[in-house]
Length: 248
Length: 227
Image (cartoon, rainbow over all chains, first blue to last red; front, side, top):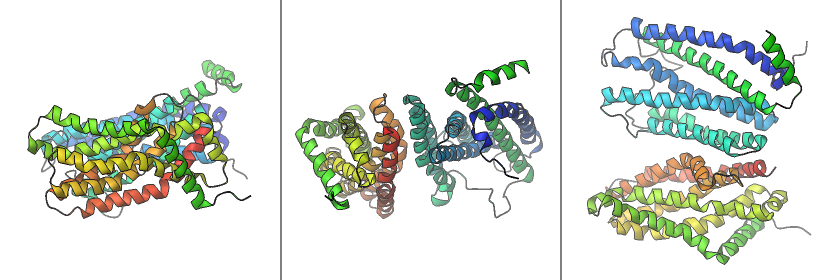
């Protein structure tokens, strides 16, 4: 039995699929957020060194993970779009950018709120914070370049190339705490060793990370549906798809 | 008839761009004068206290060099795009990345090398000691070609796009931040008597990476812009 791997690379078949997936991911995001915040604020123990203020970790760390992950996914979609010459990959990259930028901003902001009581400073220019700030500028540059070019195909390819070049920043953020003496703490979670934090804290962080991931998927799919409607507005299938949706 | 070989095309593009720049020296001088003016603004704003000036000198000179590089990027591709030469370059049998390398080399000779030569004078204006002046020139010598290479990518992506110099700066400055950090760090290390080897090594590594990948990625960006 032959599988058509490219069935959903056509906007006409992807549009209704995205519409069906959004409610599930949105509901999952809401449920996981409630569970994660409940674990974070009521179940996890008080930290021995930092007291109660450490609980911002349940927002800061998932946001930081998502900011890096979404950038890599965006760069991957951009690479797919340039290599396979598909329109939909470019739409997905553009749909992910604002969410990634938001997570980067949240990571920086919650980091500052956490740094003030912990380190005594709202901001320090250490390697990790600086490279995360550069990540925010890379997201904003991607969005700005895409919006500045009128021809949609050229816009998607040019901003995609920029995203691919900027992807080199993500390993720098990740390994910065190993390569430099930084104020930011090192990695507590690794693929090869047992985590150095309490199990409930880890569970809360992971649940919030899954919640952030579900949220990203839901929001990106909603945004890409808008992008498809705008770019494919001259196609024949648009009228049928919208009619089908208003009927159901 | 066989056209120029690989060395011939790079040399030919460099000679052409230098000749064109020589016919309009005002364009060249504008970036250099901008550099000098920006550096001179800081003592006026910060105050003439010599210790403060000596502390901020490496950072100020480096930021001004960065901004002057961004300013001069508009000349790299836009003129050739306007009169159709860029399209001919895309159609040439020689690799586009070599043509880009030639253009960036000419751009650096005209816009980056003068910055390296003037920087000791400006450092003197800020009261940098002699080791700092030497290290400033060396660090700029390693850093300005990298800035030109990375800036060429930004220039290629934004050919004919509205938004102008500000958009190119928004795209390129985040990628140039490591050069700024290690370049200024090298001068500060030299001034405080510490070894600047680590900073210079990282600057050199960035330059080598930019030399390796920059022209190739810029060529891809040119094909995207002109298709």
